[in-house]
Length: 229
Image (cartoon, rainbow, N blue to C red; front, side, top):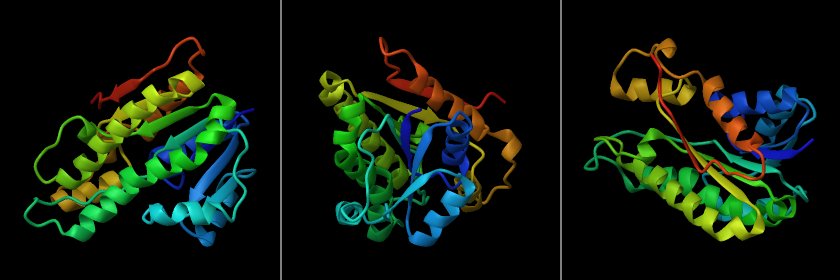
């Protein structure tokens, strides 16, 4: 049984991955922004443990985690949480940019830094669930795409730095996936939302788990998952 820390386990892809790992008896550590949310996650995923820390305030994560027990060995760190706010460059405020970059880029970097000793001890695996926007930026997607381009750079640098420590690094680039975030995107775009038109979160979860389960003689560095409909 391995230990896996997941951000964004409350819905969408994160919940699908958490359910998949729970079903096979893995130990889950789930991040939550506050104690109330942590309680909800423990009830939803019996046997899981929680770490309370707000990803929107990455500068406080070290302090928050310093008051909580961390896993001694960590088989995987799965960065799945994210936020999105669409709009043209001429309209996006500094607050939107700062929030988007904090949650989508800086928080994963800080979480990784804090948990690297546990990952090294287990020769673990870091998975970044990125986005198709991390490969190509379209109009109105500047802040989100910039945060995901940054996340790609973080993953690529980390892979090179930690290869000698036995830590594997994978980036998953899903296309549009039927999640609450996608519903929000459609609302911002002024379009009707049909979840059946997009990737099922379970399909992305399969890609994540496949990377984790690959034998140690190999490493999946990048996976692109596109809608098949």
